[in-house]
Image (cartoon, rainbow, N blue to C red):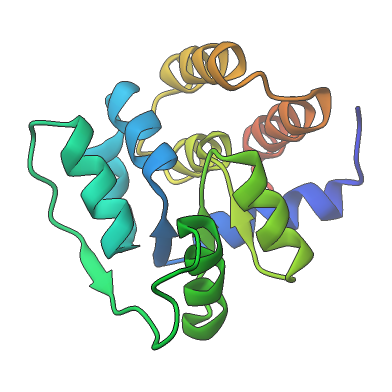
Length: 167
């Protein structure tokens, strides 16, 4: 699927122009599995909510230090997905996730939603990830998360724009 270059370039610039990202557990696990978590943490400031950090710690022996956003009164009973979207709205932060429900909820709320595939393109664009690693990450992500043709096509277009020097 081919989308207008202006749209794809805007998506890439949104990723590379962000400095802080509100991450969910799926994105942290994904980046860690790709060996990119520390690279991403050097480029972007990752924030989380308490529940995300608890989920990370429950499934990972390695400690992870993230800035934690405080919950709002009355949110205790809400599902983690809803809390993440609410926090992203209030803090005006892009939401980093691999969970389709979270990405859709963010997009429906008018929030910027970023998947790990976009971060890989961003790292490539910023010179933090060599192209062979970007392509290897695309293969792993496409298999693991079964990205649709639209997301994969946008990633491929991002790389073409990077190659053309338009970023």
